[in-house]
Image (cartoon, rainbow, N blue to C red):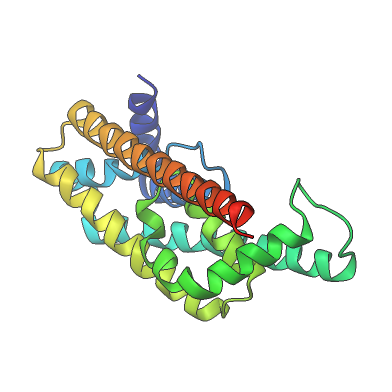
Length: 207
C-alpha cells in the first residue's frame, strides 16, 4: 500500500518529515487529485505513537494549506489581469463573460465558501482561484482559509487519534467521507442545472 511507503519515508526523514506533511497539504490545493487528506491522517497516527507532537503536525499542515491557497489566489488574480488586458480572449477555456459570472457569485457567497473550502475535496483550490479573480481582499481570503484548514486538519488528526492510529481503518473512513462529499456536490450541481434549465424554459414561454 502506497501510504505505508510514505509512512516509512516520513519516519526515515526525522524532523524533515514535517516538510512532507506540509507539502502534501499544499499540493492538495494546487493539484486537486493529490491525496493530501490521507497523508494528513498520519498526523493522528504519529500522535498516538508519540513520534511527533500533534500540535506541531497541525501547525505544519495548516501552513501548507494556506500556502496552497495563496498560490491559487495568485493564479486567480493573474487570470483577472489577463482578461482585463485582452477581454476578447479566453484562457484555459474560460471566457471573459464566464469570469464575470464567477466574480459576481464570489462577491456574494465568497466568505462562506472560503470558510468551508477545506471540507470540499476537489473544488477547494478552485474557490481560491475564484477569490483571486474576484479580488476578494487577500488577507481576508487567507485568514478564512486558515480557519477552515485548522478546523479540517484538527478534525482529521483527532479522528486518527480516536481510532488508535490504525492507518488502514483511518484511510477507509476518510475515503468514505470524500466520496460522500463529492456525491453531495454532484447532486447540488445537478439541482442547480435543473433549476437553471427550468428558469430558461419559463423565460422562453413568457410572452
